[in-house]
Length: 233
View 1 (cartoon, rainbow, N blue to C red):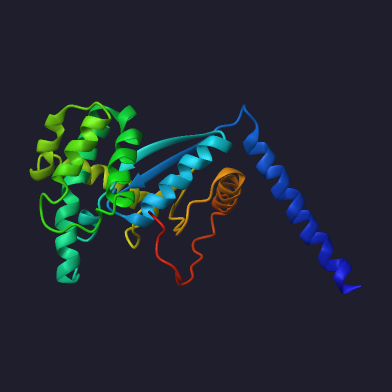
View 2: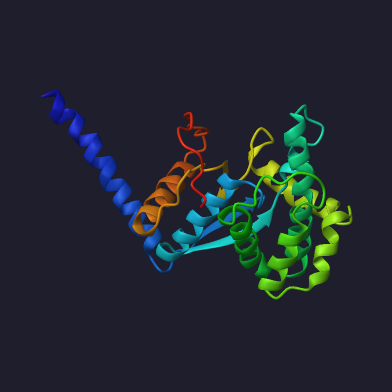
């Protein structure tokens, strides 16, 4: 008798999720997504590649917005080696801020070009100011942007604007987070943090589940220890 009682809510949940997913597959419905990123982060990179897969199987529109781990960690007591990495991370983030302002339609392509070089090219974790200068220049050339944007990597000219973009993520989700920050509709989360990139319908199902959780204003966090590093290569 008890198993029959339990079957009713379980079946109802599966029915609801099936209909929820079908609703978001409808061509007349577009799910807005805002994705704040720092190109240096391998976990953010994997989440962004998942989102690119979602674009293939769900009707979503993604706005890509730079944020900065360097700003996030500014003034914090962090290990010396990590602090040197934060120095290096200023350069790409400053360039993304300028491109977001001038050519927002190029942000997606620039993130893909620079992120591929850093992560798939195993060039991440660089240390010190200017460490990503060559990668920045090559990525700008690849996507057809003016080479002069690279000059902004080693000045503070873009820091106020970058801070504004970054603050948008903090306002959405709070500052006890990292990157990525992903806003689904009206609700933002830090994450999802993944170590592999799902493809096809698997990517769509993960998006459906994330979107479903975003519908609950009292849901805040799920977490477990990671058992594998990010599979970026």
